[in-house]
Image (cartoon, rainbow, N blue to C red; front, side):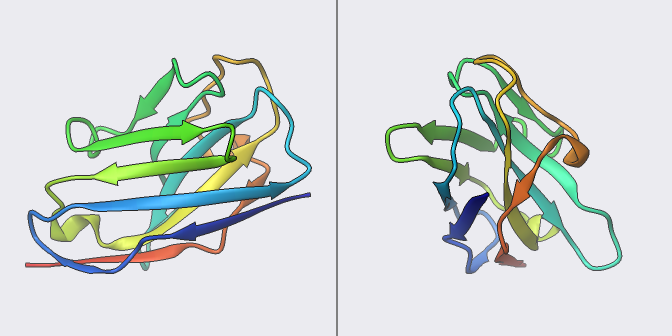
Length: 127
């Protein structure tokens, strides 16, 4: 089992920045992939960004490109999502996810590829 705890979500104004953090604990294997997803009411969970274990490979949803940056600290078992120039449409619950190792360059872009999920952290962007 892997436990994931997100933090950093809060209410911000349009154009502001936020940094989300996710701490992983438990039975963590090397070469794991991690990602950030989000969900708004009435919609399915969607990928925001994902990162390989090595950090060399990343994936961004079109909505995140140029504004969000995913990074990780394997020594601390943490993954981060730096979100800049936030917009009201970024309002959502953001979830951290973990996938068992498929190689140091593996990146998963689909929710079905991930094995464990955090409880989520609410991000609200007011206009």
